[in-house]
Amino acid sequence: MRWIFRAFKLLLALSLLSVLAIALIPSKRLANAVISELEAVLGRTVTISGDVTTSVFPRPKLTTGPVTIANAKWGEAPKILSAEGVDIHIDWMPLLRGDLVVRNLEFLAPKIHLETNKEGTHNWELTPKVSTDRSVLIRAVSSSGGVLRYIDSRDGDSETLKEFDARISVTERGMPAKVAFSALRDGVLFETNTTLAQPRAFLSGRVSDVKTKTIYANTTLEFDGRLGIAAREFDGEMSLRTDSASDIFRGLSINISPPNERLQLAGRVTRTAAGETYLRGGEIRVGGQSLTGDFDITTGPDRPMIKGVFAARNLSLNALNLPLNEQGSTASGEWSDQPLSMRRLFAIDADISLSAESLEVGSLHFGPSQLRLNLNTGRAVLELLKLSAYGGEVVGNVVVNGRGNGSVGADVDFENVNIRPFMGTSMVKTSGMATGDMQLLGLGDTMKEIVNSLSGEGNLTLNDATISGANWWNMLNQRSASSAGNTQQTAIDFAQGAMRMEAGNVRLEDFALRGDGGEMRVTGDVRLGPKALDIGVSALADPAMRLNMSGSWSAPVYSIEAASVARTE
Image 1 (cartoon, rainbow, N blue to C red):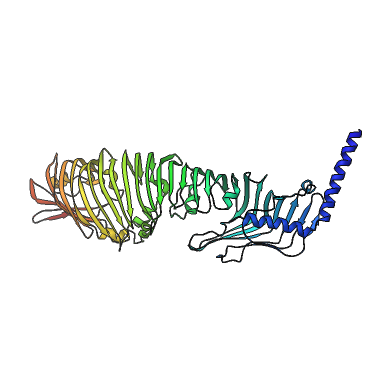
Image 2 (spheres, rainbow, N blue to C red; image 1 turned 90 degrees about the vertical axis):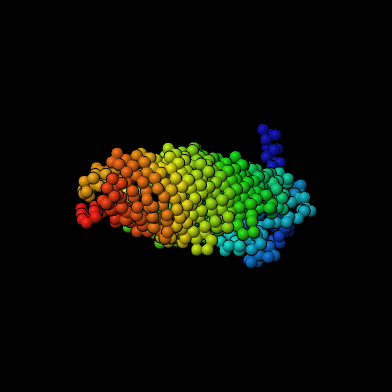
């Protein structure tokens, strides 16, 4: 029991010595020693005002008055940080050997001002000084109950985080540092945990090994690699997971509304000091879809350039909920006069290739497909290198030009494609295997303007076709328009002809039809703007008899016209 008593007396003596040491050393002197070390780490002037008070139990602590840290010389605000005070938590044992070890330097209710100037320089880019006092060691720096505000002078964006709590800790000089902070962003908890392998190099702007994990709402971002803040360069493995893909698109200010499905993105991402970004071995999963590939993002004089090669198994563009129907037509079925926002085409330049085993666009389903998108200064060219479509294949290109007043054009060839899925629900139901070509051009920045200005030409051949809603053969043979209705149809073995477009009007030029009822000729107009038609059909065996179709293309009115008698039903 004697040795226990002696050990107790020794501990008591050491405690009394540490208390005496703190009492004998002026608190202001201790605080200034800590502040000097902090200035060396930050390379910024740190100022404290007011009295410095000392407390011994349960552990030694110094409490200062208001404290500020100077901003960069070019900064708009005079201070990058101002706080009500600092609590300096001290380890008492090192004091016995003349060392000052700060367990935690805690800023009380700080207000932190971060900013980026118009040249892209950040005010948190530091130039640490070499510490000359090896007897002072700050193991941790923290804050509680703070407010962090960020302003980007390049675009005027700003961000405010409330209830900002942070802690930066290191065990010894030269050892890895751990950084953790949490805050409320728009009332939602935002938190991150990071390990810096070379903290002093990182603070001075050089590259350091970094491992970090950030969680915001239902989104998790992880990175493991190398990062440098001065040149904003990094290289490492990244993964992003979220339960709501729409949150990511809104956060990136992308004006599309994907469904609230789980989104996963992973790959090796690299950003160079020149501002170029690369993704290798990338994989994107949205719901049940998967997209793999590589892409590069390089800076340009006017806009960034994206080059990429992607592959997918079953890709559905419908998952992005693109507002095509909203801009294509109104609830009443008329063409929309809402602007198509072609200015978005000027946001980036791009050269992207995509191959997919299957592709879904709206109500259309395609088989193995190869596409290439080239976007250059507001002009987008989509090359249909291979588009497997309903038994056949489509090749060609579609152009959307945002320059000037805007235009849309196409030059496509198709072979042995069933046209029924392309006819839409508002048109006369027609099926058949089609081969042909089409060239067209429309001007304007609304669907209404484009459709009403369409011009061009095309050729069409149909095999084994069926037109539902009327039996043309019976109408001509019986000289009656009564053979119309849902149960009626016209069977066509073969059809061939040319068409010309002008100002949204499609002119059918002597289309030849052949079927069990004989041969027929079709001429007339299809007016795309009002979605109406005015065409005539005549049999070669009786050219004096003509079947007329007029009115809406979804429910045309039929009439029979002879040389001297017109009969309408």
